[in-house]
Image (cartoon, rainbow over all chains, first blue to last red; front, side, top):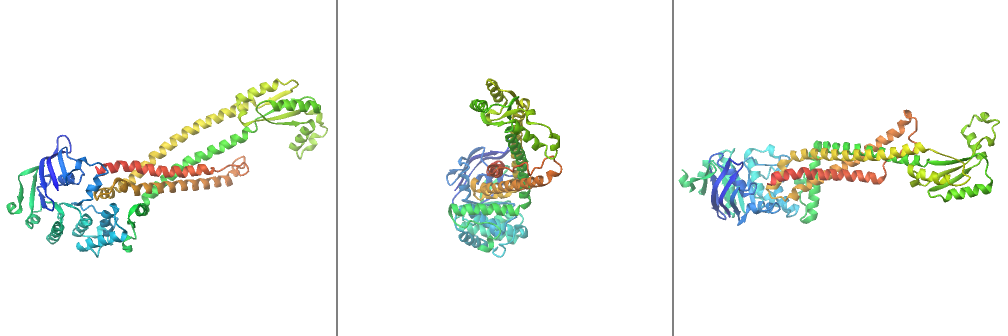
Length: 228
Length: 316
């Protein structure tokens, strides 16, 4: 589903963000991407949804070379990828409902009633059905994260990417978010979660890809049994 | 679902129609939600177009005045003696045959005296004892429109002098020359000024719109990240620019109209002529349509230029 072949990325000539990264994630797999701050986790995720292009090497999604996609093709790739951002990236002047509906609206599919039904369905799953009229400022961090997740999952994407999704959450909220990821994965979505939160990784038995200073660490691939 | 969608538009129907409605709805909501920024943009467009249209108004009126004045370019041929009717008709026909003649009018000595009396109304006593023989008889000749410039008038006078029996010719030679020079000068200055104004307006408007787009770069980024095409992201903003431009154009015309009326009704107090009677015109309809269209274009192109930069930055 996701393949990295000898990927290098340099932001500037001298500073290399990623070096010779090669790995693949199979369809329907759940993977943790871990490593200390600044290791290149966010950069790697950005390569997957086409916000960055590699300086060298290839990133393939479903067999498609992301950097070969032109500007009009890229949106269609992004419709198959749900992204949960570290800072949520919610629209402050829109309600919870509108923030989630935006994913379906930009795809132009479905009538108003259809969009409403799907948005309400996912918000109910997130336990946010009573807060649809609120704007993000009036929500707690955990609630905002759930709205962000609802937005990423509402169109049932093939791939779900999450960047430090539990960064500012308490343990109860962390587990709730992790369970949502697991549920999505069970339904067939390929999940990549970038995190340096040990507790999160310890609570799930999934493959771990470890980054260190922009490179895959020596013990790059492991399962959480080895991690402890 | 209606209650959720009170504030913002949502796609109400699949397909193109639903999208068009969605874009318009979004554009209008954007204007409502960012009212102040929109007010600033509309204000800028209004002011810019007001300057351009004020200039156009002055230009149109000067052209009108020029048109009226040029009708006064008239050649007069004076005769010391009264002409016999046959002689008069012959001369009139020969003048009429010269290329460029519009009208030839015979003013007899009696007619001349009548006119003179008319001008001295109230002081007729001054003319007591003055007889018609004191005044000369004359032909008053008006020229066709494209024969009123300096060169054509000179050629015309040459031909007129060639007619045997013609009297003393008088025409506003220097006046005609100055007037024509003034007209050409005005057209050049007006054209240049117009070009500079339009450039300044485009610059100001695209910068103002860039500010409004910049204020919403988060929204643009999120739309792009959830898979919106570039056109989909741009459309509501382009429509917003279009609405701003049209609103600015209409406001500029309304302001100009009020300035025009204020001037018409108050200028008489401090000007030597009365603008109401002197026929000061407002812009013709095609100019008004042009200004509103320019407003729409300004808003649209300004948004397009502003968006191009940010969309490239955001969509990578």
